[in-house]
Image (tube, rainbow, N blue to C red; front, side, top):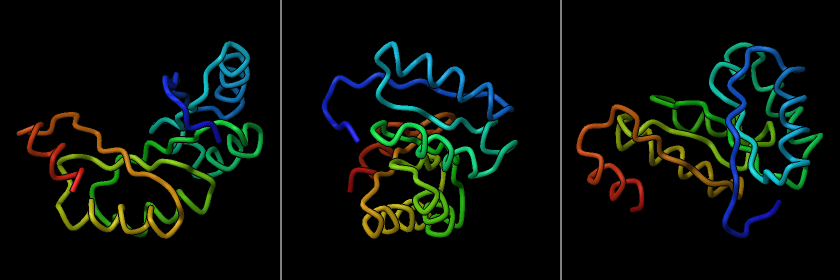
Length: 131
């Protein structure tokens, strides 16, 4: 997995896995290093989408946009076990949920990304997530 910056990420917000894989192939050939299994893709295809992306693109960073709001540890573990390098948790989630997801990331060597969409007190949320 490439970790150097800058990193180009593409959101695969499709509902069909084959379409997502086609766009991922085109994107990686153009230099994209980070593939996001978007929320619509995960809701439509499940974590099989994450597994397929990791299998075909093992050198890319795979982000699972799970939009976790509760059961932080469980959902993060599911995504990490499927091959995600990064799991997205909502900034509006409780501190406990964010902490659970971070704890799971430490167990699996992954990362947590906090989505600040619709989050009130955005700076406070970002600082809280960094702790």
